[in-house]
Image (cartoon, rainbow, N blue to C red):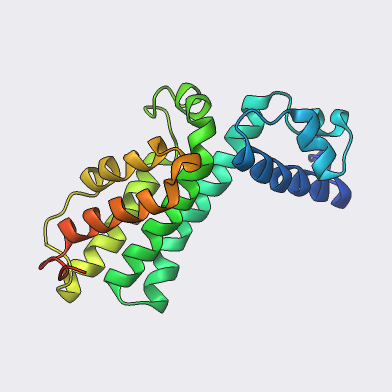
Length: 191
């Protein structure tokens, strides 16, 4: 006997889930210690509804992580269709830095849940997104050839350590300038 197909998710349940994720992103960006009660209140749902979707704080954080990293991975080829490779790379780095400001407060949870990144299903796709950008830049002559995308990822990992409350946006921009200048065939002229 065949089991019954899974029950489709109700439209209102999907809406609740999206509102919870949006509220969590905003609340956790404001404070890594944001409570689940505050997130539920901001989402306009009861705490029970939040727990039905995300039984633990870690489950909620990891779903945000998967969603946001997936979006960053998808953005690399999108940016290349609209911009020259060097510009696409910098715009993508800026988006990674923006995400880093959110991750700053919850990095320990993500690190623990992915076994220090060793069990992170997003690792290879993220490295592949970097490779797409580097390859496009090498092909048009704006970036050095033979760059290792994992080396670039290691450089970008500093973004997760920048405290957004202490001038983080400006510091991230300066660090990204240094990274991009190191990847270019010829570094940018002094400003």
